[in-house]
Length: 99
Image (cartoon, rainbow, N blue to C red):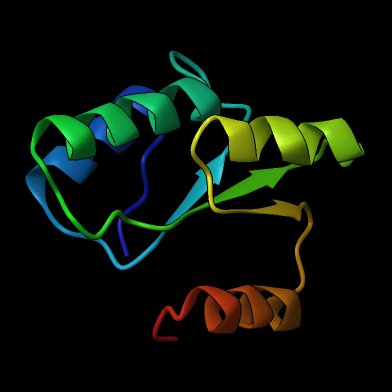
């Protein structure tokens, strides 16, 4: 497990190694999770990475349009904080991520 303190660190970690999944907090200092996700997807496209890394949004915002916004920016799933481990495992199963 790797922890990034902000979106810039998240991108730096992503560019240095492969991850099975990214749990992306939406509200981070320096660069938020949405902008970091967009940059990660741009990196994957630019480098012709065939299997994109699943990104799960973590947020305190739980309105329907918040989920839609996250998905539209390249995230694969959405979870409200505080999250439930059973829900996370269910998402892992849906996205076929080894747990």
